[in-house]
Image (cartoon, rainbow, N blue to C red; front, side, top):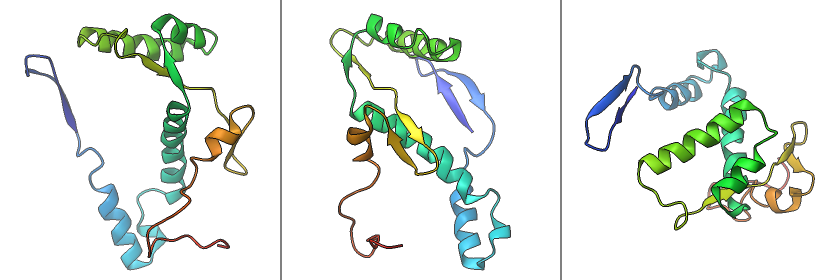
Length: 147
């Protein structure tokens, strides 16, 4: 669950639920029991949904500053949902008095994804794929070269 507050700290909306707070505990319980059936969701679903967030972060990291009109133009042909999402973000920022001239938005590139190889392909692949894994992990979390 969760709540939304206005600028005067007045709660204007309440969402039911625990916000997914039991997901981690369920995963640990399933690891301890060693029974995949104990998972409430297949781990691949978590992997896939996390990948979407990671790809958005990567596009942001390799993106560049852009003004509002440039961002609107970039999503012009992306469909009504993308256009509505951009409009919603801009409206939210302006309503909260963010000066988009002083704090420009970031326009990330469209990333093409090869689901089979789990790699970016296309014109931004080289830059984007650098962010798919770390070069150096902390022991004992090192990933072997051959898994």
